Image 1: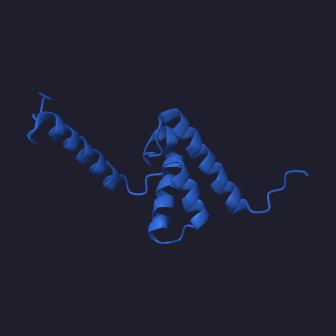
Image 2: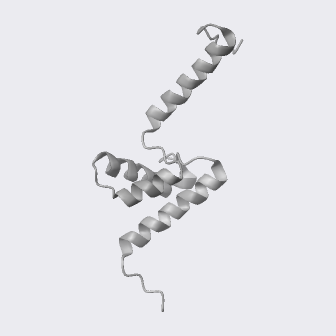
Image 3: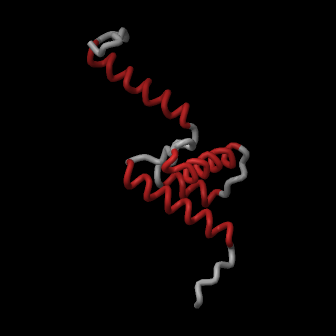
Length: 104
């Protein structure tokens, strides 16, 4: 009734998750750069979630929560996939894969 927090770690995780949700609402994505001065703490938390996931140290409920907001587990793979998709669109429109540097 007085707001005592029994599970400090769970409370801290939920607080950061809510920060990430707010970040996504403002920026349209969950890919927080860990060295961004404005979001340094959140960026480090995001990176920590990725490390825990790779080590199978993240609970399935937390994985589900992060998945539900479009969390990017592997930013390099995600970036590669996005660029590949753009290349496929370019090929469909231009009929070839040769893209010039100046966008022509």
